[in-house]
Image (cartoon, rainbow, N blue to C red; front, side, top):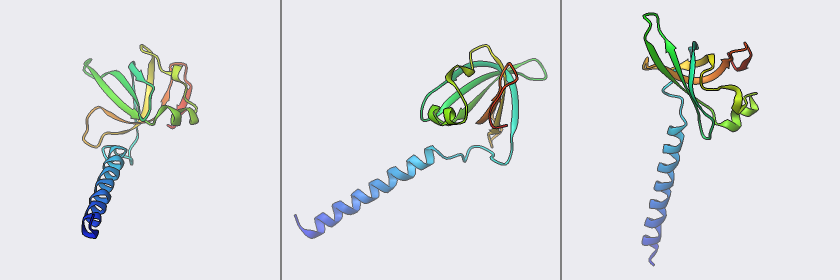
Length: 127
């Protein structure tokens, strides 16, 4: 192979690597959340997905007019939550809890999970 061809292949390889790195960083971005604000949302756990790279909590929240709104919260991976005192068994479907989170910037019902006040009053994570 010629030097120019090898150089072209190297440039393409570097460009692909950079594109893959930037998309991975974008996936783990907190840009959708208002990190300057915190909300406390009380409701009933519909689901708690304990997994990596992100845990997910779905909460049924009854608003002021009696309508049920489903809030969805994304948290760190299970391994990170364990380091912050969480256990897989802490949130069960049907539990009444308060989720502490950074809300969505776009106003949709959801946010970035920071912590929870469990049914027994125990605080896990951050408030």
